[in-house]
Image 1 (spheres, helix red, strand yellow):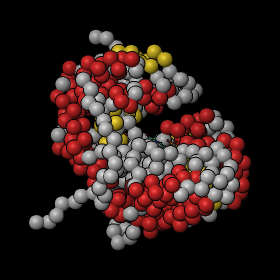
Image 2 (tube, helix red, strand yellow):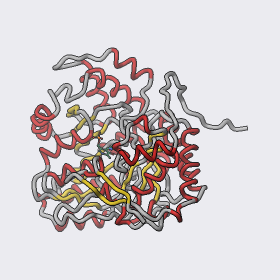
Image 3 (spheres, helix red, strand yellow):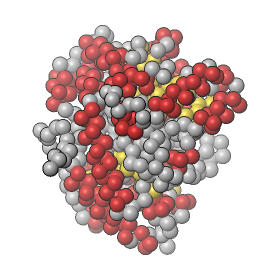
Image 4 (cartoon, protein in one colour):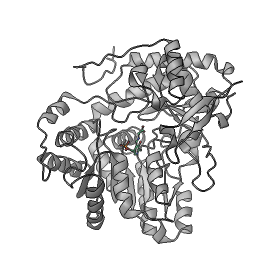
Length: 460
Ligand code: F0G
């Protein structure tokens, strides 16, 4: 018999978690104003809110923490991290930051001005926030296939080259500071971008003289999908694929909390010295001196090890297999999800799951609350609350798809935990025709409202 696949690690340390009762959860979610970000972690049994900073580090990373160099300037941990980044991504210039959005803030302070247009494949919400905060426009050029959950396109994170060309051709050159490619594309469902698409985007960018930035939070997962799905890459190592991907970019922003395999941290890296010189000033102002940028020396050490681990083939096999195992189990149970299953999460199609809840009542949030009540599982709405209001008209933006994202932290939960979530989702699915009402907004912040929003139930 062929031996089945199993993870390439065993568990050395555990953290207890608790189940609660439905009555407890009803009280807690009401107190949290139906916003799952407002729950205390002990009120959650299985936490799939995010894969960001929530994973487990390896013993090698914990060991590296102990040898961190906390010198303010010139720390050996910084040099180790810088060399690791150079060897994996090939960028000469490197600045650490405290997390991904900080890297965006620093780089965009250099690149983006009021009135600019920044096209890409569905910018992440903090990226879009930093663009719109500068009174610039984020334009989504994702392929149409990404908006059809049943379409099995292998690279639903790809940019539609016609849409991109249209933006470049109709916007004055000095008003497009960069194209941003998000790898994998979080908003579209953790969907990868193909090497071919990256190459074609680069060619188009060169034609119009526009730089290309990779938002790299899940770069290794993207490389894994290229290896699995794109002709010509089966014989290559992940490191070779990553090197080829990044040869097509001018620079990168990184949230190390995902494919850095650490709990906090970020960085930016780039090819151009003039970008670096200007970004250095913002880094010192916003983040910290050039050789720590908001990170402790020990955390830079752990990140250097994490970046080496994340490009190991066996690590990625375990990671992507777990997400795939679980996603395919949900598909087999008839639950509508974004297909094929992406790299870091399963995205449940809330409009099809709860057909009776109007989109004006935040259908994906309604599903998130139902799943929490059912089993203490926390997911996150990727729908109208996240899409926020149009900055000019202040009207709600209703995205084509309303998702409940169930993100899987790295090396954290077992398949048994995920089986509990699958059963809970099935239970909610069985009573979906009795769920008719969602929520209305009591209070919201002017930008990135979903983190702090307060909601109340719409009564029948
Ligand atoms: N880019 C992408 C694609 C992301 O998914 C995130 C964060 C960021 C940038 C910002 O990085 O959190 O380190 O400041 N995504 C998290 C999530 C929050 O849950 O998907 P950060």
